[in-house]
Image (cartoon, rainbow, N blue to C red; front, side, top):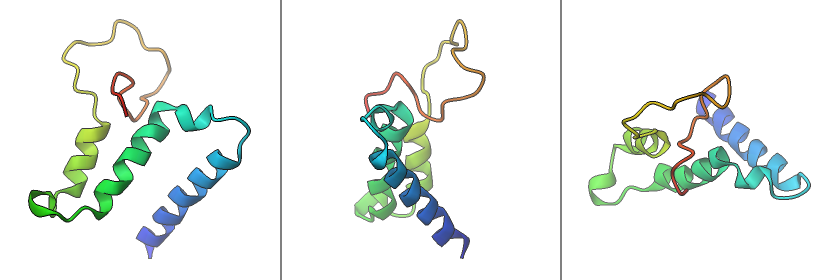
Length: 85
């Protein structure tokens, strides 16, 4: 089952981060965003039913209206660095 494999990938990723020396990896904006997104996957309360993908996408999206003057990396981060996750 492909979903099982994806879940195991996330679990292994978090395990590797926790085993690494220091907490630098855990403070990365992408990791903080991922950890904030995980509870959304099991939330079935009220109006939150059946819109998990939308909620995770909104959480990880950059909602700024102005373009960044210069890229700091060659690729997208996958999480908004200006959000407090």
